[in-house]
Structures are given as C-alpha cells and as structure tokens.
Amino acid sequence: MECNDLNRKNYFTIPFVNKNSEKFNNIASKNNFKVSYKPMNTLNRFIKSGKDKLDKMDQCDIVYRINCLDCNASYVGQTKRKAETRIKEHKSNIKKSKDALTVISQHQINNEHKINWDNIQIFDIEPYFQKRLTSEMIYIKKQINGINKQSDTEKLPEAYFPLLSILPPS
Image (cartoon, rainbow, N blue to C red; front, side, top):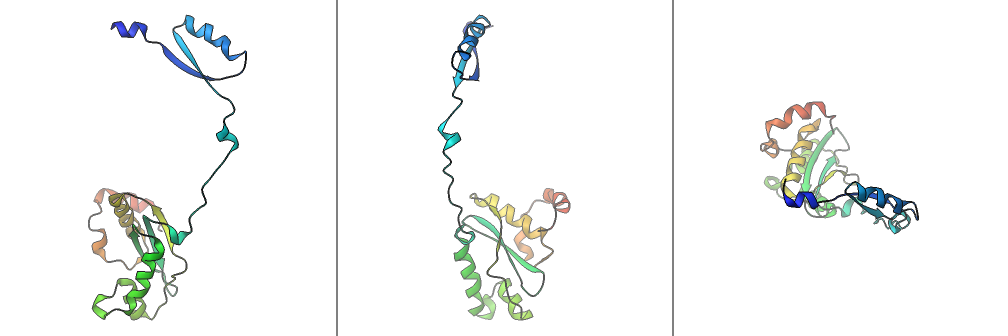
C-alpha cells in the first residue's frame, strides 16, 4: 500500500438540510470519509428555459424520407444542409435534362406520380457525416418499396443485416 493511499479519503454527497446534514460529518470523519453537500433547491428545478423546437424544414444534419403520393414508393436521403434547401433541389431536378434526373424525378416522370413534398419524414439528426451515412444506409435498407439506387448501401457492413430483419420497416 502506498503512502498516498493511507491519506486518501473517500467522499460521499448528501443533500444539505440545515442542522441535520452536519451531524453526518462527525460520523463520516471517524470512518475516514468526507462529506460534501449539495443544495436541495437549485434554480434549475424552477427555471426551465427550453429552446424552441426548430421547424422540420429548418433542421440540418438529417436523414429524411420522401414518399410518393400515388404508391408506397419512398426515397431516403441525408443532408448536412437545411432540409428546405435539399428538398428544393429535389423539386427542381425534374426540370433538368433526362440524363441528369434523380431517382425521384425518374419515378415521377416514368409513373406519372406526384411526390409528397409537404410531408417529409425526418428519421435521424446526426452531425457526424460517417454516422449519418450509416444511418441513411440502414433506413434505405428498411424501406418496403425504396427507389434509391442500390449503390447507396454498398458500404453498409453485413453485420447490420441481421438487425435490420428484426427492426420494423420504416
């Protein structure tokens, strides 16, 4: 046993109650303990300054899903930017040349379907890019009728596949 171990005191914390809490100090010091006190009433208990929730379209660092209004097809994507910015890009893509169309635009044109632009679903908020990509791949795999390219999930480790089968579809 080192010399420092003999002089070391163990601590425990108790709520401070006037006149009662101080009695523990005598008992604790005889048993090689030190007592620290914490206040019973803190401002945090009384003042709740919760932040206003962001509108869904103002969220950043998200994994999202866009559904088709005419069938059960869906598209899952991820973006670092605001959801509103990314959705505008998806909407405007249909005006591009045929070889520059995204899978969402192709679905709209080929099937004459409408996309539910007003009700995107946010599955995950993840600021770290690699984690967000993994989350996106998982949600792509969980889709029932996904229109994502299969190359979007090539980097998903096979270790996740058994988990995906027990999770409910998204």
